[in-house]
Image (cartoon, rainbow over all chains, first blue to last red):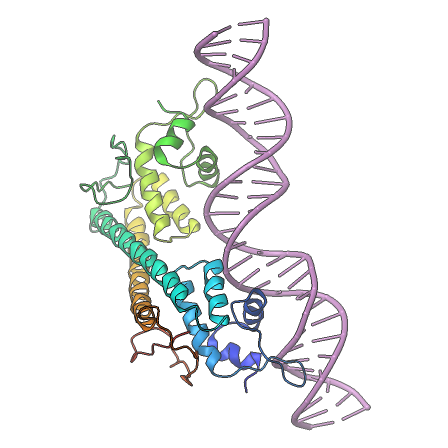
Length: 144
Length: 144
DNA sequence: CTAGGACTTCGAGCGCACTCTAAGTCAAGG
DNA sequence: CCTTGACTTAGAGTGCGCTCGAAGTCCTAG
C-alpha cells in the first residue's frame, strides 16, 4: 500500500532510518512487493508513533527492542510488556521530578541576573556537597 | 588544597573526566602545585554541581562551553548568560511538558494491559497522524 | 634505596543512534 | 529505448560524551 518513501514522509523518519530500524528489529520485517520493495500498511504508523514516544522519554534502544520482541512474539507476553512499561514509567517520572528541581535552581539563578544588572565575583561557598548532590536541600543560589 | 583524586571523590566525577572537562573548557584551567599537579579549592565544587544540572537538563556541551566562556570572561557578560539560561529554561520546560504528555499515553497503555489479562491483536487503526504527532488529541490507546 | 600509588600528557577506543555512500535493480514516462 | 528516480543491500562514517591505556614523573612510607 505504501512504499518506504511515503512512509518516510508520513512518519517523519528518513528512509534510511526506517531501514536501520528494521535491521535492528525496532520495526517488523516489512513484506516486499514483486520488486522486492518494502510495502507498508497504515498500521505501522501507530507503532512508529509509539516508538517515538518511548525514544522521547529516553528508553534505550535495547529496551525498546525487548518490548518489540515481546510484541512480535504475540500474545501471552502482556504481563512482561506491562512490567517493562511500568518500570519505564517510573523512570520517566523520576526524570521529570529531577528536571523540575533543576528548573527551580535555574529560575533562582536567572533571578540572580536580575535586569542586565550584574554584581559579579562568585562560584565560592564552602558547601561540601551533602553526600547526595540533588536538590531538595536548603537553597543555594550562587551566580556561577 | 585539593588534588584531582580528592576532587574526583567529592564531585563524583572520575579524574579522567575532570581532566577531559578541563581540556575542552568546561572546567577552568586549574592551577598546579610545585609538582605540576592540579590543585583545586572548594569553589570548584559549586561550578561542577551547576554543570551537572545543565547536563542533566540536556544542555549540549557546546552551549555549556559558551556559558563557561562567558563566565571566564568575567563581569559584563551577565545579560548574555542570563539570555542563555532563559533560553535553556524554556527548552527544559517544553521537554517536561512533552514528557508529561508521554506519561499520559504510557499510563493509558499500561491500563490497557490490566491485570495479566491480554486481548491481543493490534497496532491497527488508520489514524493518519494528525500532522503534529504529540498528545493533546482525543485519546488513542492501542495495545502495541 | 625502593616500591607504591597518585599524578602528568597524549591519544586511542567505545557505545549509542543514527546517517550516509556506493553500487546496483527496477518500473514508469517521454 | 532510454532516462529518471525511488528503491535495494552492505557497510563505512559521524557526532557526542566520555573512558581508558601507555608511558613517564614525582612524593611518601618502609
